Length: 245
Image (tube, rainbow, N blue to C red; front, side, top):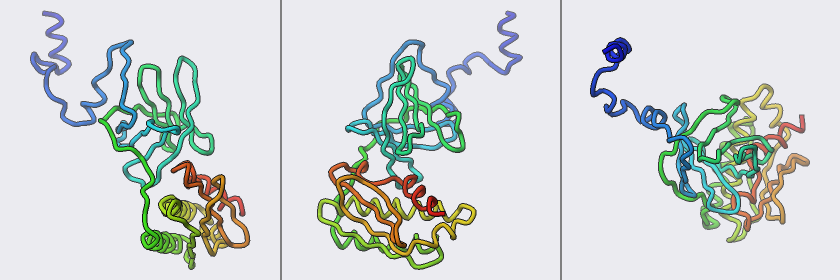
């Protein structure tokens, strides 16, 4: 009787324990796994964070990759072992992005949540792959990237690519990622000044992906055989753009 009175005082009533969650968020984060039970997510899976952000984590290939639903950029990660059997996934600059526990739990680290936030499995996902495109489609996407970059820099920016049929898809993605870097830099203090030294973006094939700013030309080198890992990330491009100031 005392336990029943205590439950009533806390707002619990008989039968309410089986009520369905009011929100998807509640359903995902209130259901905890039994201690010691290992959860094996599929190689390609979708996750949702406590803040409601959704992303796809692809661990089906040689390099794990992540893409958030609100961004077109695919981030290539490097897995490193951590204490207690955990795995830390880092980005191209060595910053931690995810931490996966031995039991399957995942923590996401962002600039807004540097201490991490829990994420919950939301279902299987589609693999992250570079999509081959035609030379005409590449030209259209280079033009779109040039328009976005020009708006960010408040000056004309041209995009050119020495592409083959094997590299057209990756160069298209690299151009899009480069334009995202322009937008990010433009939002920073003196962002326009940082972009003032760039007049052209040149995409080429190379043995290793790289980014170099020289003589007003931002050189983006891609390696088609490496997929998304064969082009620099927006973070690496931002670093090249801001290093000149």
